[in-house]
Image (cartoon, rainbow, N blue to C red):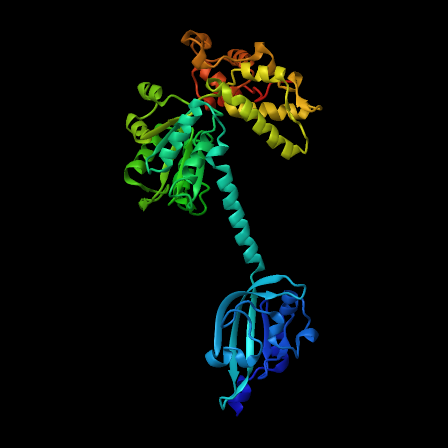
Length: 468
């Protein structure tokens, strides 16, 4: 008897325990009527304890119990037959009439002589989890919308060839090399290939190889272990490991150093990586899509890129045409960008005048689709009428004197010379002015990478945008 007393809980403590629980808890007597009702159930169901106690559990109208729907009485409930119900996912009916997603469990309580005393039931609210599920489904739906092939706009013959290559690439596991000028949509195409491939339920990880120094890029791609270098205070997973099972997109692959080239070649050959500061090899299963706006074959001939890596990457090349080579797509793109800006700004611009469209059709678009989208966004800032007009467009688009000529459309002799055998501050400023401050076009003209142009601009305190 003393042992029984020592093991029994004080009634006040039991009450506090029930009141502090996040899950809903209620009890039933042998007749199936509610005898206790904790505060969490009040929040979950809308019924106060005073409203619930004395009423049958059919008050909650569970959609699932031991069978479809809630029985009409305790005599029909399977709890007497089974003695317990474990983690059944279902809905209960809130006082205000809405369905609440929950997990319910139940236990039959018997006295020492085996006679039934009642039932204890617990209810876990799944509302937040259900919302998280819906958010995840919506995110996946939006991802699918973003990477649908019909979001890569183009009706030209050149773009139809690109669509055909994307579909073929998505159906294979081959390494892909996307080639095209800056602004042609290489990351969008990489996302479309991944989304339409067998790996579409796995991660898609994008890395810009020109944005980081060699040391930082190595750590970013391969990860590192604690103490590998100054500042490495903990282990870090690299982007290759993050993309395991899915796809990694390596943008501006032509900018990587010879050291990173060697490490990337090993990944392509062995499908394994080593974190910085660690000798352990880690197997990875992923698909690599690389992209560049440079001519890798030229880099190989000049000794700036490994030939064996080039051929490992160029298993299945996809070349994206510049906008100047598919001018028939300009009107469709403009219509798309106007619709997007209308939704974004709340304006109701109906279209573009013939004069303004003629200017857009004549422009060489060195920045490609990205430059066209920026031009439409610029026009939305200035446009106050029903249609975009000439003077709503950026000055570099509407003034012929500011239009740079693309490399593919001019003879090799038109490349800007490097004064004194090298680039000078004055020469860089002149070339920036001639190219409308388009850094990609400047890089093409002087024969350097875009990253090198940015470095020179920082070195000589040249602003990234033209002075007002």
